[in-house]
Length: 389
Image 1 (cartoon, rainbow, N blue to C red):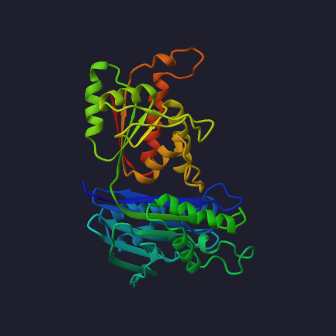
Image 2: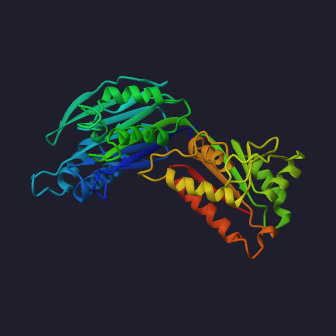
Image 3: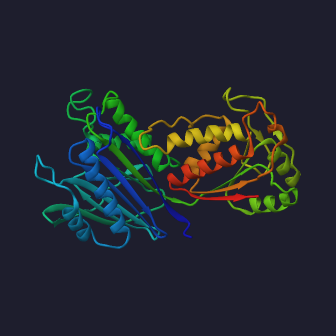
C-alpha cells in the first residue's frame, strides 16, 4: 500500500425551499488513484438532482475504469433526460483524478475554476481548451505534492451574497483569499469544505439562493490510529490483544476503565487520572505513558458516534469537536481529522459494573456503537478494520 493517499470531503447547502440538492459529488477510491467528480444540474430541485446524480455517477465510474473524458461526455450527452421547458439536458461538472505517483488530471466544464492550495497559497495551473460534443472543456495535467489541497465548487459559491450582503456575489478571488486565510497544514479536506460552505451560508443569510457545494481533495501521507475498547471475552487472550495493539504503528487510544487497567499492567505504567470535566456530560480523560489518549468507554464512544454522524453528513458545516478538550472531542479529532486508517480492537468481555438493571449498557450496545462508528468512518473515506477478541 502506498504511503500517499487522497483524502476527500464535501459539504452542500440546499437552495431555500427545496428538499433535494441539485449538486452531486461522487468519489471512487482505487488502489492507485482517486477520482472526484462534482456535478451541478440545471436549475434546482428534483430535476437538477437527477441530472447531477446521473452525471457524477457515470463520469466517476467511467473515469475510474480508465475511459477517456471524450467517452464520458458522449455518454452523458446520450443519457441525460432533456428538460421539456428549455429543451436541453444540461449539467456542469468538474473532474479531478489524482494518482499515488503524483499525477493529477483536472477537467472542468462551466463550474467555477478549481482552486489549488500549496503550502497555504493559491497556485495557478495551465489549461488546454477542447470541444467535445459541442461543449468547451478545459483540461489540466500537472504533478502534485504532499499537502496539496484542491477545492472544487458549484456556482452557488460565487453567487453567495448576491443582492444581499454583496453586490456581485463572492467572486473566485475572494474565495481564494478566504481559503488562504483559513488554511492550516493539518486541516482536513472535509473541514476546509465545511469552512468555505459555512461562509457561503452566512453570505446567503442562512437562506441559500442556489444549491452550493464545495468538494475538497487533500494529498496526504497515511496516518494510522488504533482504538482499543474492552478486554477480551477470554482472559487468556489478553496478551495477544495487547501485543497486536502495540505492534501497530500510529497513534493509540484506549477507552474504558477495565481496558485502561489491562494496558497499565501490560506496560507496567501507572494510570494518571483526572477529575477535570472539560464537558459535564463526558467523563474526564486519563493518561498512560505509551498511549496517546485514555478515555472512559461507552458513554464517550456514544458521543463520538453522535459527532461522527454529523461530520459525515453532506449538509453539516459545523466542526463542533474542534478545539475542545473533552474525551469525545479528542477522539473525534484523531479519528476524523488525523486518521486515514483506523484499526479497532474490541474486547467482548462482559463488564460486571454494567450488569446493574438500571444501567442501559450491555455488550450488544458496545458492539453496535463500534460498528456504527466504523460505518461512519468508512463513509468519510477512511480505511477501517475491526478486530474482535
